[in-house]
Length: 369
Image 1: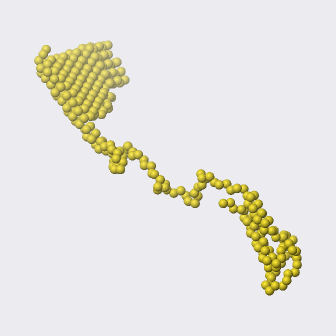
Image 2: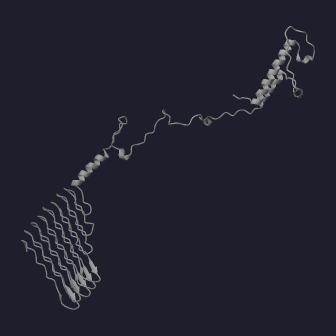
């Protein structure tokens, strides 16, 4: 509905009041406004005179308009007003209140459960099948890993099945294999004059780990001593080969004596496995003094029918005032098989002084050969 402006409405009300007053006066006197001034007959009804206006306002008073003219003016005033623009449906906004929480009748969007929540209590209305509890799976997995797993660096394998981990830190031994099945891990090399790590042992079935190499020793003055090689791990009691011994470390001195590191012993074989070979002796070199090669490691014995491990060769020596090669390692023994062969002694050279060869290692005992 369109409403006229206040000014036009006020004008129409004043005009209607003046028209009513004129009509009442005309009815009381019996004359019409167009008859002009005249003297009305006396009446028993008292006539109230209109209030007298101030002289300054008389000039501004105009004759009262006719009713038809007033109605025409009101109609014209309404026609002159611009048509009110009806707001579009999209323009209606509720401004008397701030939007509150979501409509309680509106459908709520439920987030899907997170991965960590899978397996928890689910609503019976959904009828969905949930996965097993993650925590329960972790417990089962951890329990299983105690018996069946491979060891980490330098760690043992599972109690029943698994390989031992190789040594990682300098001189760290390899881990042992599982009680039923698994190989021993290899020992880590030595550093700063240290020994190599021993190889890990097998359980019932499996091979022993190899011993780590002895530390290298290089000095400008004073004596140099190479590190000893690690021993090989034992093979499985029922079947398995013993691990080889690690080689002795190399030694070099620019102003003193030098001694190569001894080789590690080979690991013992199982009932039907061979013994591990002994490690080689380390080389030795001295720029101004005596040098001696490292001795070879002994070969590992076999349990019953396997062959004994061969002895490691002695290390070579290069000296200035003398030198001697390292002795060869002794061969491993066996019960029903062939004994291991002894290692060869190392050679030696010297600028001045004597130089001697190392002794060969003795052969191992066995039923054959």
